[in-house]
Length: 232
Image (tube, rainbow, N blue to C red; front, side, top):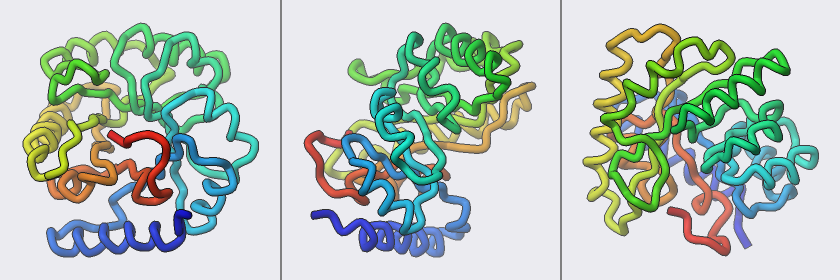
């Protein structure tokens, strides 16, 4: 049985200790509890113990749990099909996995219909893995240009999923490149594009991600324990 309260405290202590060592403010690190396959009671327990952001991989899970979960910020962190945007556009605070113009256009259209602006992150497949979604870094600026005029979405940063490795330091190169890309885009001062959040790092590698510039991390196993899937 997962000891959720103790796990959250442990993660928070690790973040604080790491930030103190490298000269960062731990309050700038946004912790997202990944709730894939986690039932509403355990999510509410996590919320009772300080979690304010939860991330779901699947639209159906958001729909199933939304009314059962206490007030919290919902993040869509998994691959999102265009035809399912309509089901979550009124529920989520941020969509992390935007990597196609048709998806961005659909989010914009659905958000406009309910008079909302949705914060999004651009997903980058920084390691060019065939099994992962996300833009190739060489295509990011073209993609950003295509977003111009979509007034009901706000680009707030970048997201990536690094390759899983038992030795997290071996994926440092990918986190480092993401931070370089993040800074490059920020320095260009592109209209309508803000680089506030760099979402990268999971249970296995979040400390390396923070060292390299992540300010948003996605932790599932580290909070809720092992589940019936491998968090990668």
